[in-house]
Length: 178
Length: 433
Ligand SMILES: Cc1cc2nc3c(=O)[nH]c(=O)nc-3n(C[C@H](O)[C@H](O)[C@H](O)COP(=O)(O)O)c2cc1C
Ligand code: SF4
Ligand code: FES
Image (cartoon, each protein chain N blue to C red):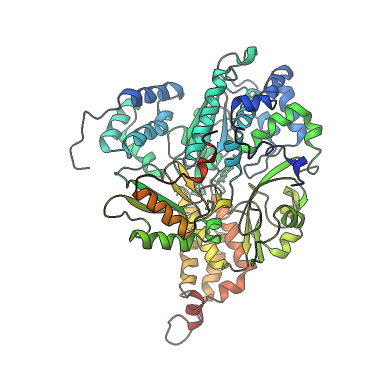
C-alpha cells in the first residue's frame, strides 16, 4: 500500500450506471457494498487500493470496513489475477470421485503447485471447497463456468483450448442457447 | 423411470426451455400467485402450516410456523431466500435455479406476500456464476410481466426482488450470517435470540427460507395441504430432493417421498453401486451430519424422525455414498480442513477446536499420532459442541466423532507404536504410502 493512490480512479459509463442502480436498489448504502465490489472486480479483475478508497467515499463507510469485507470473502481479490484461475474442488464428494489425482495431473501439466500461478501469468491453480456440484465431480470452476467429471484427458483438452484462447464449452453451458 | 408420480419439484428438470417465462406460464406457472392473492395471506400461511412443510435448508423447522413468528404489527418485513448451497454434498438448489428459476421466484413472491415483506433478497453463492445470471433473467422477465414491482396483478401488493451474489464463505449459509452479509458486513453469525423473524436485516423482522422450501409453496397453494400430504409421513410430509454423490449407478438429484426406506432408494433409485465398488458408509444429509455404516443405513427410512432415531440427521439431503476403497481417516481430514477453513473465528471453541481437530487428524495420517491423540480428539470435541454462536462448531464435531467411533480401527492402525526410538512405526508408514 506504499504506492501513491490514484485519486482519479473511478467507475464510468455502464459500470457507473450499474453501480448507481445497485445503490438505489439496496435499502442502505452499506448494504450495496458486496454488489459494488463485484462491479469493480468484474471490470478490473481485482479491486485495487484506489478502488477501495473511491468506494468507501461513495458508500460513506471507512476503508477498513471495505477491506474487512474483502478479506472475509474468498472470491474478492486485491491483486491482479492469472488469465485463467482454475479452481478445483478438493472437498469430500469430489475427493471420493478422484479429485486428488486430477489435481496432481494439473500440477504436473502446468509445472506449478496448488496456489501458484504460471510464470507467464496465464494459469493459476486453486484448491477450493465444495462447489455445489458434488454429483458431477471431480469438478473445475473457471470464472462463471463449471467443467464436470474431470479426467486427465479432459484436463489436457481444457488446458489446450485455453492456450489457444478458445476455452472449451463448459458443461454448465448446456442450456445457455435455449 | 417409474418414479414420475413423486416429481413435484423436479417435474420440469432436464427440459431445455424450462427456465423461460413463456414455458413456465404454459405449464400453469404464476396461477398459484393469483390464487394466493384471492386466498389472502393468513390462509396461505395456514395452508403451508397444514401441509407440514419443513425447512429444507437443514434444520427442518416447520415453514408456516416460522412465518407466524413475524410480529403482526411490524411495519417493515424482509424475506430472504437462502441459495448459498455450500454444505458439502448438497447440489439440489442448483438444479431448481438452473431448470426452474420461475418456480423458485413464484414461491418467493408468495412467501414474501404471506409474511408481508416489501423486499425479497435471493442470496446465491458467488460460485454459481451463470446460475446467478439465470435467476436475474427470470426476475427481469417477472418485472416486465407485472409479477413484481408495484401493485402485482392488481392485488395492491408491492414487492421488490434483489438477486444478491455471495463471494465465497460457507458460513453465509447460516441465516444470521447471511443477513449480516447482505448488510455489507463480514458474514459472521449473530447470537439468537433475538431471532431474525423478530429482529433481522436492518433490525427488522426477516424470514430466511431455503430455495427448496419456497419452491414447494406454489404446489401447496395450488393443490392444498391434503394433496401435499399424499406423499411422505405424518411428521415428515411431502417429497424432498436428495442430491446424491459418490460411485452409485445413478448419482444426481432425485425427488423422493419422505419416509422411503434407504434400502429401496439405494437399489431402485440409485441403481446400487457402480461396477467394482462396494458400499462402506453413507452420509445422509450433507457433510455435517453423523455418518452411518452401510448396515445402519440399510435400516433407516429417509425422514426426519427415522434419521434422528438412527443418531443422524436428514439435513439438506446432500447424500454422500462412501465406497469400500475409501480411507476414512483421509476423508475426515478433508472435512476437518473444510470446517477449520470456514470457521468464521468469532467463538474460541470453534476457531481453536476446528484447528486442533484438523492438526490432530493430519498428525495421525503422517504416522506421528499416538493413542492419546485419539482421546484428545474426543476431548476437543466435548469442548466444542453446543457452546457457540452458531452450529458450525457442532457441524464439525458430528462427523469427527462419528467417524472415530464407527471406524476406530482405521484410526488405530495409524497410531504410532511407541518404540524406543520414538520414530513413527513402520506399520503407520506403510499405510500412508
Ligand atoms: C454453517 C451453516 C451453514 C448453512 N448453510 C445453509 C445453506 O447453504 N443453505 C440453506 O438453505 N441453509 C443453510 N443453513 C441453515 C440456515 O441457517 C437456515 O436454517 C435455513 O436457511 C432456513 O431455511 P429453511 O427453514 O427453509 O430450511 C446453514 C446453517 C449452518 C449452521
Ligand atoms: S460457531 Fe464457528 S462459525 Fe459459528 S459463529 Fe462461532 S466461530 Fe463462527
Ligand atoms: S464436493 Fe466437490 S462440488 Fe461438492
